[in-house]
Amino acid sequence: MQAPTFADAGGLTLHYRRSGPARAPRTLVFLNSLGSDLRIWDPVAARLAAQYGVLQYDKRGHGLSDAPPAPYALRDHTQDLAALLSRLGIERAVLIGVSVGGMIAQDFAHAFPGRVDGLVLCDTGLKIGSEALWNERIEAVQAGRLGEIAPTVLGRWFTPRFFETRPAEVRGYLNMLTRTTADGYAGTCAALRDADLTGQTAGLRVPVTVLCGEEDTSTSPDLNRALADALGCPLQLIPGAAHIPSVEQPELVVGHIEAFLGQLGPSVSGPRERYDAGMAVRRRVLGDEHVDRASAGVTDLDRDFQTYITESAWGGPWTRGTLDTHTRHLITLAVLTALPREHELEMHVRATRNTGVTPDELREVFMHVAVYAGVPVANRAFQIAKKVLSERPTGAGAEGGDA
Image (cartoon, rainbow, N blue to C red; front, side, top):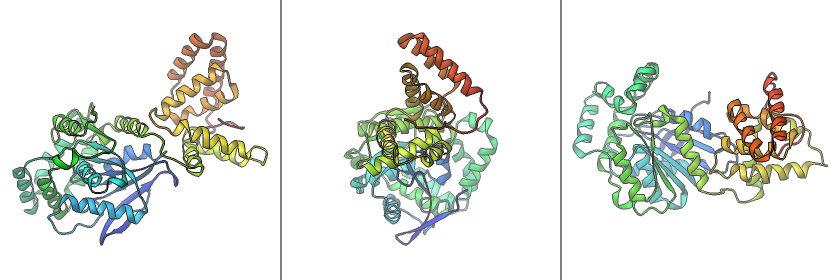
């Protein structure tokens, strides 16, 4: 468990968490909703941190960050984020924000366009709620009634099925909500009340996608569709989710984020960056044990070759995005079967433990290869896979080189 990390961001102490490779192709910054903290993104961030730099943080008034006196403006949150990124030496990032976090992301892209590689806007809008709604909420919180209204608020975060099947988590998220400071909650309500991004967001010139839970009653699919239309970008609906899809449907959210990141194109320029990005995905696919063993066996004879493979193969197609790692591994298995390349195929069948490729998917790959490349190579692939899958797991890779 990572210890809490704090930074002075322009005189305000913010709590944050960083993860991912030291030299990653991109940095992803996650922004939270009203009444939540950085933990709502944990299921998504953990998956993406295998390849990307990840920054999660508690905005002012939430989690372990400072809670200055209310009210706040949306630009206060934006300036906090800018100060935190500067403090951590992060020049550019993809911002991924839910609800008010999505509005902060929009405002940041307007205020600091040169620091944004892309936006993933989740369950948010150009303007959220009415002045009357937020004034009523502010009055209740300042009167000490956050605990009284919290069950109603939480009822909009998740679907009925979530409440039925995951009651312990419901209780935990209720605790998260009710322990938000009055200044933090009421201050951010004021920021939402006063923020209308209709004019400025339409002028953004940055890659963007919009996600929304199909059952969101807080920021409805229609509200998110209006946002997507203003930006000229697609709206992706998340089935089985309400206002916080990262908790209810993290795998679907990850899939949409990975697809979006892939559309941004290559993000590494020089050989050092390509090598580092390639090494990160190589470890993700083949496993640390295999890569450490292969690296330990490098000599002057094959040192340049190993660098070439890491930089050009793993730091090339494998890090391009567009196709997720799981899909790229299926393609790799098909190609190695068809050529055939038996040694590498055996190694990559072992690596399916890391990429989530199932025996059922292996069967379908080999059946497809049998049609288009011939029965003998498919037959041999089945033999190799049966041997590897019957072995007791001892690590992700085999001895020898890898491509």
